[in-house]
Image (cartoon, rainbow, N blue to C red; front, side, top):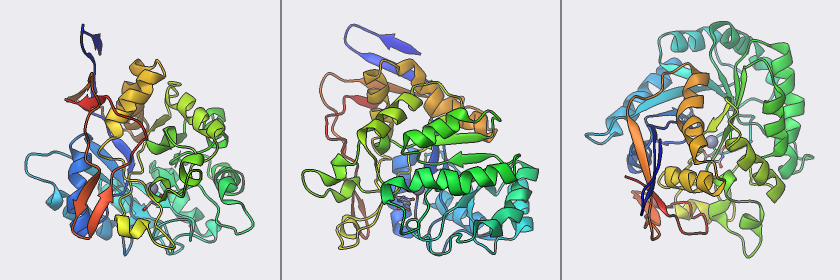
Length: 353
Ligand code: DOR
Ligand code: ZN
């Protein structure tokens, strides 16, 4: 519901969900979980903790740790994912799905990103488990990048679609797939061109805002570095268009990924941008700037549950535009040190009320 009073503009939508999130473990989990649970009802929780969440038993234990870390009075449902390895047991995956412990499986190509060393090198090795997923209706979430050294880092997503994702979809046509954190026009086009209803794509907060200049021009800005890395401006514009397009299988997955500042500012710094704190205010601001505030409800609150077979929240969130910039924390304090909150490079005028 959109309303424009004399002074304020506000938007009320069903409570949103985050369809791609890193919560980590231990002290870091306790520090970052409230930032998500304050605004989001559910999240697809990534399994790339150390050691990774590889089995149904791992997922059940991790889910218990997440729920134990949730502050009194907050409600939040973690939707667990299982990290695929070349040894993943299809019957364990099926049991975890059928008992509600796990919602999806996650494919990390080995070496593609944070804690992906246990990931997959030979994709044909996971075909049996993907066949099982297709049979039971369990979605495959994909980190869509090849890691071959001869492929330029800015081309890795487009090449992955051709060499890995499309062959998987051809081989196992009933498999539901989510091409996560899309960063290119190629990814958007691929999702748009699919007509079997089984392929979705998620878009992060930061990829709607930054392009590769924001990482590499005017000094190296580690806080804008993530994987897949932000691409050229034309790709950012394609993502903006996709987000407001009303395509029912394109929805929000923040990929909010906390690393301490110390770990970001290394000679080999970590990939990941922590956006949980500011995502919904930024979404309102972006959709308003696009003249598409009425499209945010579907992107953040309805299309994700529809794809994952979940109900839309009955509770709501209200966002309100302020006359002056809203102050957000510059960083979140974790026991290991500060985690910088994503800075879009402009003032934010919206807040959750
Ligand atoms: O930037 C990223 N950070 N991309 C990923 O795929 C993983 C994530 C993380 O876990 O830090
Ligand atoms: Zn991620």
